[in-house]
Length: 367
Length: 129
Image (cartoon, rainbow over all chains, first blue to last red; front, side, top):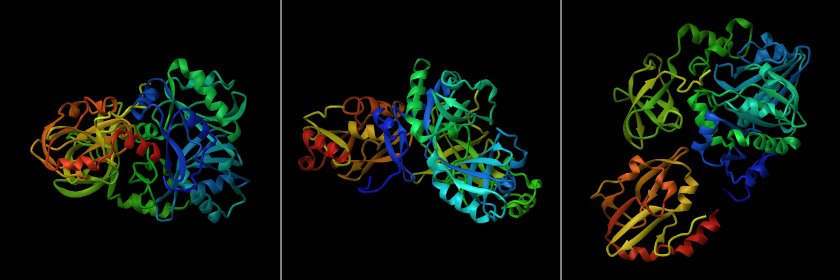
């Protein structure tokens, strides 16, 4: 780590150190990449539950009589259709149809929205929304006001329920409720980034460490473990959830990324709509595809993909899959080549290694 | 914490070598495996391959990343730990023992003198982390 580099820390930094976490520079934040080990933590989330510090994520709040119009103007999904207490996954796009960010839109009230955005994009997102705001709505950057914890896995609900009077069974997937967790006011959302059931909890930074410790204590008997960003990445990859800077960025559109379902072209004017409408009529040239490496080796981000021996695309994310015990990945390929069952090759350290396109998600939780 | 065997010599790139006459057994250090995390893949040369001091001997991959293994000595690979292909996790469990990587017939045994002793290496990784 460079001497003198001022890494931002979350309110949980001390807790991570006392748990012996391995801390790394993650986009300017000192974050835990692992505690007991990525594979162990990954299995804990699939089999019991894991607790993640995701306080580096950003929050932007939008309030005012035309808050819904502003959110709908800057995002691809249909925000005005949300009921109070409901959440949607959405895209924040440039005019040309590429991603500024992928975000979660929470409707707090008719005239109030709460956006959860990626850590590395938060300032950019805020500046963008403020710059294009021609509505009767105020845009506020509120990241410093929140710590965010995620508890994910089959034991998440029972563990969290010990610490809150909010009836969590009634908080359905992609809904949230404001309540109290272990004495601290909290926004409790049934969302996550692991492919498991679970909750993301937004609360005051000052209360973060106490709630973190209390959840670990409450979940100890059930096998709940602290989990780092390493496991978060392998979990989200198995569930085929996009990571900004990998599956999506300024050059990628929602249709290419397999996220057409968050684009509502008929909802009215929004930034990126014209480009997306044209792209929908024309069809996309490339599309995201999942693959398994059938030869020996692990595909990594940025590796070249060959079809019939010729360069055809690139790997966006690649990793061993602890759940499937295979080496998996996502890549961009010409749209006509993305069907499952195609033989491809990944160039791993100058060696073409055999792989096969497969159906995604790689992992779907049993319900 | 792990103790570093006194009769091994250590490189700045976190490999160890134990010599027995003209043959050196090479592995990665406890510190190296700890920094890498869960090791899931090991790529090693075949017997007969020539390796050079400070040049890549192969690679190890953890869940997160791939890292080169730099040979602490020069010579010819005479034996490879085949067990690691099936059980790369042994590198996390026993890096100074059963999870040795290769045995090398040394072409320049004096190279050993440039490597660190156990206590020097202990200081080195203590200072680094």
